[in-house]
Structure formats: C-alpha cells, structure tokens
Length: 491
Image (cartoon, rainbow, N blue to C red; front, side, top):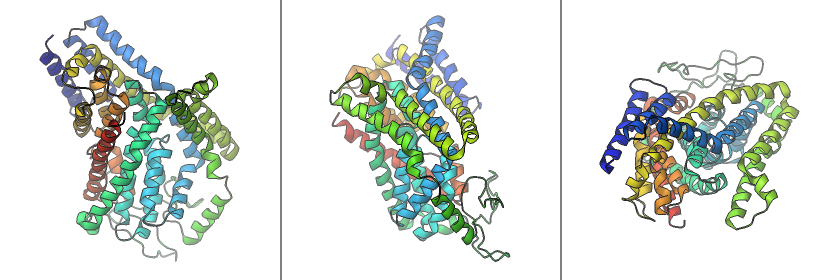
C-alpha cells in the first residue's frame, strides 16, 4: 500500500474516533477499539491479524502498567481516607508566605501527590486553597486557581505515578524509573516557569476581579459568628456546585470534603489543635515516598551500570509500589482502623477500573497503528536528533485534546502514532512520551471535568476559568515542550 494511502487512512480513522466520542457520544474505550479494528482492516492487515494485534496491544500495555496503575490508585485512595491530603495542603499554606504558596502548592500537587485520583485531589485541596487566597492579596483567587490547574494537569502526564504518565511509559517501552527521573526534570521548571508567567500576566491586566471571580459573602451571620465563604450567585452554571456548602454540625466540615471553609473561628482553632494530636504527616506518606525512592534509586544505579539481583527486585516498580501500598495500608489501619481502609480500597478499585480499560484501549489502537506500517512511512521524514518528531507528537496531542477534551486519550493516541519512529531514528522514547504529555495539556476547556471543578470550587466565573485553567495550562504545555527539547540536547 502506498505511503499516502496509509497516512490518509490513519488520519481518517483518528478523525472518525474523535467524531464518535464528541458527536455521537460513544464511550472513548469503544471508540478507540472500533477505530483500531477499522484501521487494521483498511490497511490490509486482515480480520485475524487485526483482532489479534488489537488484543495483543491491550495485553502488552496491561503487562507493562496494569498493576502499577492499580497500586498507585489504591495507595492514593487510602491516603485520602486518612485525611493526609487535606493536612498536607493545609500545612503548606501555613509554612510558606503569600508569594511562595502558589509555587509550593503547585510543586507538591504536581510531583508528590500524583498517586491521588485527580478529582479527589482537587476536591480535597481546592477549598483550602480558596481559604488561603485572600492572604495573597487582590489576585489571590487567580494565583491559587492557576497554580492548581497547572500542577494538577501536568502531574497526570509528566510525573510518575500519574496514570497517563505510566500509560505513556508502557506504550513506548520507557522504564518507569527513567520516566520518573526525566519527568521530574521537566515538570519542576514547567510548573515554576508557568506559574511565574501567569502571575506576571495577572498583575498586568489579565485578571479582572469583578468579571473573573464570583463575589464572596464575608459578612457576619445572625448567629454572631463569621459567615461561611460561599457564592452569592448560587448554582448559576447549572453544574450543581454553586451556592453555599452545607456544614456538618457534628464536625464543622463542609460538604464532607474535610475543608474548614466556613468554620467559626473558635471551631477552626479546635480542629487545628486536634490535627496536631494526630499522627505525623511523614508517617502517613513515608511508605509512598519509600516506593518512589526505591524506583528512582534503581533507575539511577542502572544508568550508572550498577546491578545486583536484590537491587533489581526491590527497585522494580511493581514491587516498589506494592511495598508502598502495603506500608500505607498498615499505617492507615493503625491510624484510622481497618473498616475505613477497606472502604478506601473498594473506592480505589472503582476508580482504577475505568483508567485501566481506557489505557488498554489506547494500547490496542497504538499496536494496530504500528502494524499498519506507519512507522516506516514516518521514519522517512524524520532524522536522528531532529526536533520534528517532538513537535509533531506535541501538535497531534494538542489537536486531539482540543477536539476530545481528554488528556489521557490525546496523549496515548499521539504517542501511539509516533511510537514506531523512535527506534528507527535513534530518538529516546522518553522524549516522545514527554512531548506527547506536554501536547495533551494544550487548551483544557469546557469539555474537561477539571475545568468545571476549578470554576465552582475556587469561586471563579467561566470567563475567569478560561484564563486560569485554559490559558494557564496551555502556557504549561508550551513550556513543557521547550523543557523537553532542551532535555533532548543531552540524550
């Protein structure tokens, strides 16, 4: 089959997948697998080879990252149940001054907390960030919302154990330890530079307080206490999040999310004293940190040429994360009891199921793309050391994300298109993974659940969220591509 035919058919299939997801509202998993089948048949693989290749692709990526994703999500679910996430975010807001809070919170969310399911992490940290915003001055909401949007989205695709990051590593055959190290190298400057750029723009006219954020009622209540922070507009967007959150009279927490937004002053003090009596945050996070240290140590020693069976075993990501999960479970049983740990595990399995199936479906499409001869076609146009593959995968991921609205789908699909090229031209696959992740960040908009959660929970208008989330994460997308290209000069 001619090169132009393979390219045309592949492009048509990708467009078809996008239309199935966006226009026909067909589940992304079904759309990806259906697209893989059509591509295989249209490029001449035949019925048997097409189905076998699709199933093999699903199985291969599950072999690489299936247990890793499950361990990471379960660990995050247990940490969430212990209240560790809320306490950590609150501690950061206390320790760092107004100028440092957005950077400290952003780096912590983007790197250390990526085992937490994104929506859970956002719901736990957003109310605390909003509570701190007034201490940052006139543009506090804008700065905190931007920092959270950038760090949440970057962490998914650039930092282990972010679910899309692990999927990209498995798809492209990148050792997880290597992905973690180079992802860390890229994500840290990306978050810092992007937040700095956005803060510069916010102070120079980007943010309009009257139009970009919802009014906050801080007048005293009839009961004599300080009123809860809430939106005067109620549920103006029909998303179910607007209006004042109900306060639990038993523990003073809002919406069951552990936030102290809306507590009376004396109640805040009581809760803070209670937290001081709880077990240390280091104890709660120690098993997860140990797992990450084991993975990083193994990767560093491997690059240094140091090998030993014991080191190889304990630094293997599946073993290291299992150790972290077992340790987290033990600590949690000691601190909150076995019943709550079991509940967290059930919630974690519920969350990980959809992630695993979507990742596997992406692997099916990538495998069929590779078998169709796409690698041979694209390999003719790229040369070793060229930035063209990185720009191409970034652009494809960006376009897919604008159309589909899913960071994970766009990153996996774009990486799958160029995965066969890496080996042919001598390009390190980790660079393709990082470029695909960077591209998938571009233009987070109204199709994203994260967009609406940030809008409602941080008191922004839709116009404001388009600035803090859509523009902010797009800036991070471009910065991450630049950092990846710079890294490519040394690999």
